[in-house]
Each structure stands twice: as C-alpha cells, then as structure tokens.
Amino acid sequence: MINASYAGTSAPVELSVVVPAFNEEQGIAPFLELLFGVLRSCCTRFEVWVIDDGSRDGTWRELTVARARYAELRGLRFTRNFGKEAAMLAGLRCAAGQAVVVMDADGQHPPSLLPQMLEPWRAGRAQMIAAQKATRKSDNIASRLNARLFNGMMRVLTGLDLTAASDYRLLDRRVVDALLAFPEKVRFFRGMTAWTGFPVEYVSFDVAPRIAGTSHWSSAQLVKLAVTAVFAYTAKPLGMILRLGLIGMAVAVILLLQALYSWSTGIAVSGWTSLTVVVLFFGSANLFALGVLGIYLAQLFDEIKARPEYLVGDELR
Ligand code: UDP
Ligand code: MG
Image: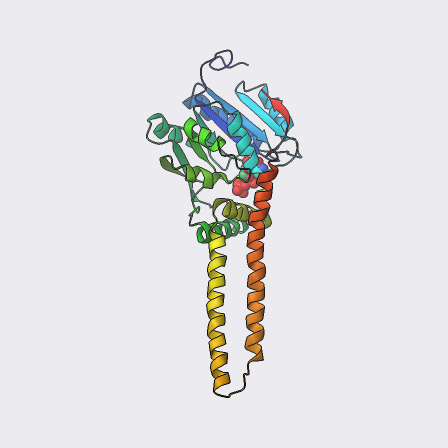
C-alpha cells in the first residue's frame, strides 16, 4: 500500500518523527500502529525514521515487516549499540522535515500529544516544543530513584533543572540545523537544545507505561550519562576544585599560624591525629582534582580522535 499523499511527490516533508529503538521487538509494531494513526490524522506530509541502535533481538525484522504497511517508514540500523544520543543524532541527520519530533519507541511518549505539539509550531509561536513529564506514576521506585539521583547531580553541577524534562520534543528546522552544526562528539541532547536559546513552549504529559520490555537504563549507565552531561555541558567542576584548593590553603595557613603560636609559647606541638587528618584530606582532594581533570582530558581525547558517532549497517527507505 503506497500512501499517495507522500510517495511519488516531491512536496516538502512537513514533519519527521525520529524514534531511537534498542531491543524493542515486542513493542515496536503496536507503537508504529499508534503513531501512524495519529500522524495520518494530523499531518499530510510526514516521514518516520526509526533508528535501530544495534538491537540484539528482532527489532529490525519487525521494521522490515512494518515497511510493507507504512510507505512513510524509514529505518537505519547501527552495526552495534552506540547509545540513544548517537541514535537521535543519526535521526536528525536523516530527517527532511520542516519540523522534527524525537520520541521513544516504547510508547512512554504518547503519540497522541503530537497535534498539541504541532499547533504552537504551526502558529509560529515557538521553534521548540518540549514535552514535560507531569507524573512518573508508571515508573517503578528504582527508576524514580535513578531519575532523582540524575536530576539532583545535574542541578547541583550545572544549574539546569531537568526534573520534568524529557527527550520528547519538537524542533523547528532552524533548531535542527543549529544542532547539526555542532562539531562535538560528546553529546547531551536535552542540554544542547536548551543551549540554542530558541523560543520554547511546553506541553505536559503523563508518562505512559512501556508497551513491552523494561527500561534499558541501569544506575551505572545513568551515572555515566550524568557524568557525560555535566562535563560536556560545563567547566564548573574546574572552578570548584580551584575553590576547594584555595580553601585548603587557607586552612593550612591557619594551622601553620596556630603551630607557630604554640611553639612560641613553649607548649609542645601535640596533635599527630590532626596532622594525619589534614594530610589524608588533602591527599584525597588532590586525587579527586586529578580525576576531574582526567575526565575533561578523556573527553578532549574523544573529540580529537573524531571518530564517527555511529556506524550504519543497514538502511530501509
Ligand atoms: N534506546 C536506544 N539506545 C540505548 C538505550 C535506549 O536507542 O542504548 C532507546 C529505547 O529503545 C527507547 C528510548 O531510547 O526508545 C528510551 O529508552 P528507555 O525506555 O530504556 O529509557 P527510559 O524510558 O527508562 O528513560
Ligand atoms: Mg522508556
């Protein structure tokens, strides 16, 4: 079945939907059914790019099957798992639409929100429409704790409040082009879109339960994402270790003065314990500071190697 509204015409695509998918074999077919239903009702010229992020299950097979049903479906398959950031980037590169929406493949970002996101963009009120999480009722305690940990770290270290933020957003072509012009390899989509400064409007949604399967994020992966996000986004930690060093020097000077005073009054310098504590504290502060520098260095290393963010194994057009 070929959709006459799209295939064979050279009319520009109004909306591209980018969907990163990793091991979503069970949920992808019902998700596409839902998505195409909504798209057909609110848009005439659209395309859907599903980026298979190196799934080890039958996600790609499901996509090739679905291709027969949906003429507007396109797909890329990575050679291995490169991560959601890489998948979103690949989608943005492929997307031809005047607007691009990024959404998850698991149904947690309800497609029914699309008309609401298109409206302010079509009216020209905003170049970005960000969907914000009103509730996380469907998430279990562990993933809520994970999210709190992540958001807390981000707030303290970057000043960005991401509590309600999600990757579900609509971007105008200008925003997409701006993002694609970023040469950097270490990416954090939510932070980078905020950085561009284009006018934003918000719509809120209740996070739906997953159609199938479980979340791919472990606590360790979230900590890794937080570290990437923080260090790719801000140089603040460098300033923080500088201040820590200054405070330490001030404390050391005070202790020195106190020791000199005790010596001058003839009281023997006691306090082996305090000495040990001070040595230990500044020893570890040194190591910590080196670690922070090391992370920046590692990111610089990644940027300078300039390897591709992902490799494509298969394509579905
Ligand atoms: N995803 C991906 N690559 C990965 C991990 C996840 O493309 O390495 C996709 C996944 O298929 C889903 C979206 O990113 O469409 C969000 O992932 P998930 O549902 O696991 O995260 P959560 O909803 O728990 O934040
Ligand atoms: Mg999810």
